[in-house]
Image (cartoon, rainbow, N blue to C red; front, side, top):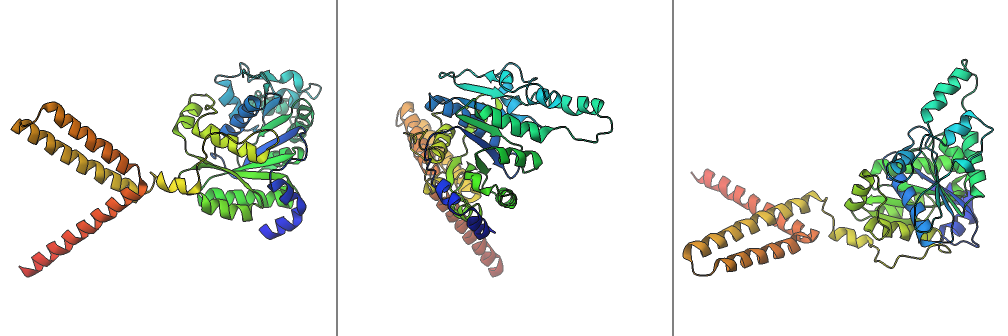
Length: 382
């Protein structure tokens, strides 16, 4: 299927896959994912803020196209916009209304960021059913989404559209109207399979050529397997591998946008610079390489247990030093504190390296195995 998609897209994949843009022109970009919970909404918002911040001349609009859950509306409504009750729902229920008056300003230094919420999505079914009791025709959601993208694209240099998690008719309607599609992928096999299904669906409706690239989000281990297989299966380039960032997760839970200078923000800038190099420069801060994740993989159970063993050993040794020094009174008390502090620093440095933790864990396992065999031999001798 990947080979079929590559042949189907022809030169379009290679031209867009390099991230080269022949000229600066307004771009409508759909942010999609194979399943929910991928961090798609946070990435879409971060892209909008960074495009407005780093490209001061660009007019940027964020649009929430997730009619079902309105995730972006709830997120931005917490701190950044005052009214999320009006939006696309007003146009769905009254086709005489236009979209530009529904845009709301978001406070950023450049002053070039606006937002179109979903609105009161509960009204759509409630009022539409009241007007059409037989429900012969569904609400005109897909036509409104397409129309909004066409109209707002003329109002901005970048229109970032947050779609629903997964792929459905509404998301396909958005993808048919935008210029580019960026897909958010996670490292687990379920997410990878869902992403492959999304790409296959786009190929079936002749939209896969719009795929600008994919972002691996919430990376906690070496992303090289996902990057390697994704480039083939998704027929597009990997824009960035974004590491797990606790500060970004905390900001999201508080309804805040992560700082552009943070770990999450820097890697999103890296993704934007690959997708739109004529607009966004690569970040000055260092980007994590695939091998860097091997050194910081605290999720490896073997390495984690090695870290616990290291901490227990150091605590025991440090306590012994303190007891010995205090009872003998051969050295000042402050010297004992210094010894414990030095041990703590050494232990922290050792525990921070995954390979060290793994070595300690495996060494401890071998020692425990030796003791068990010795105990069994002793019992057999009796």
